[in-house]
Image (cartoon, rainbow, N blue to C red; front, side):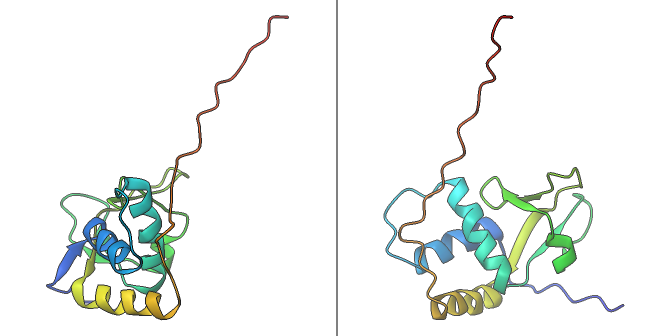
Length: 130
């Protein structure tokens, strides 16, 4: 099994998602964490991502299997696993791959001009007296 070398031009995924958001539409609204999470999903579909599970662990390229079942949270800063797996942090993308990924998404017609993300409202359980 060969290990891909880690590029030396890595950017935090949250910054890359903000750049992609700006490039893929005329966006004037404030950029919230939820929108960055959605943009990270689009980038992950066409751009290699790097991350690590532990602070002392070196960054490595994440495989499709690594990403499976994960959910980007905290403004694309973490890849959380609702199933309880250890999250990936320090998520990153290379500047070169980001440019290629944005061009790919532009050719595909992706536009975040009307992207909105609002968390689902919390449901408060109601208990009726018996």
